[in-house]
Amino acid sequence: MTVVSADAPATPDVERRKPSALAGWLRSLGMFAVSIAAGIAVWQLLAMRYGSALVASPGQTVSAARELAADGTLTNSVIASSRRILIGWGLGLAVGVPVGLLMGQVPIIRRLLDPYIEFFRFIPPIAFVTLAVVWLGIGEASKVVLIFYTAVFIVTLNTIAGVLSVNETKLRAAASLGAGRWQIMRSVVLPSTVPHIVTGARLAMGNSFLTIVSAEIVAAEVGLGALIWTSRNYGRIDWVFVGIIVLGILGFVFDRVLRLAASRVLKRYEVKV
Image (cartoon, rainbow, N blue to C red; front, side, top):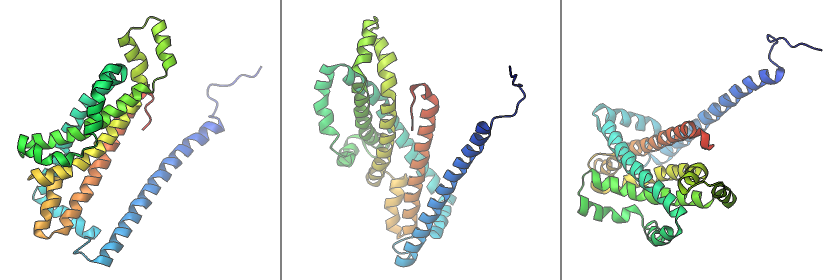
C-alpha cells in the first residue's frame, strides 16, 4: 500500500492552474489597455483631421477637465447627475420588481396592467420633459420622475419574463409537497427570476443615463447634461467632450459596481454578469 505524505508537493495540475489564472488576468488587462490606447489614437487622428473647432483632442479634453474641476463645476455636475440617476433608478427597481413578480404570478393582474405597460413603454421619457417641468418644476423631482419612468418598465418586463420562464414542473412539484404560494415564490420563483431582475437593473441603469442628459438639458442648471448643453454658449467644444467622456466613465463605473455587487450578494442564485 502506498502512503501519500501530507507534505507532498502540489500536483502539476494545481501548479499549472495558478499561473494560468494570473496569465488570463494579465492578458485581459493587456487587451483592455490596448483597446483604450487604440481608441485614444483614433480620437487624436480625428482631432488632427477636423481641427479643434469640431473635435477636441485628448490633450485639450484633459486640460478642459482640469479647468472645470478646479472651479468645482465638474464635481458638482457629476454629483448632481449621479444623485438623480441613483434615486430614479432605485425607485424604478423598488417598484418594478414587486409589480413584475405580481404580474407574473397573478394572470388577472397581468391582464389588467399589461395594456398600460405596453402603451407607456413605447413613449420615450423626453416626450414628457415639458409636462414634467410644468407639473413638478425645474427642481430635482422632475428629473428623478423621468428617470424612474425610464427604469420601471424595463425592470418590470424583465421580472415578468423571469417569472414566466420558471419551469412548470418545479411549480407543480413544490405544490404537491404542500408548499404555499409564498413558499413557492421564495424557494422556486425568486431563484429563477433573480438573473432576469439583474439584467433588467443593468438595462435600466443604461437607459437612466440616456434620460438624464435630455432631462438636464431642458430643466437643470447643474449636471452633466446641463454642462454639455451650456458649453455651446461659450463655444467650448472641449467642455462638451469632457461632459460626454465623464458620462461614459461614470456609466462604466456604475455598471461594474452593480455587476460586482450582484455577483457577491446574489451568489447563491447563480447570477452570472
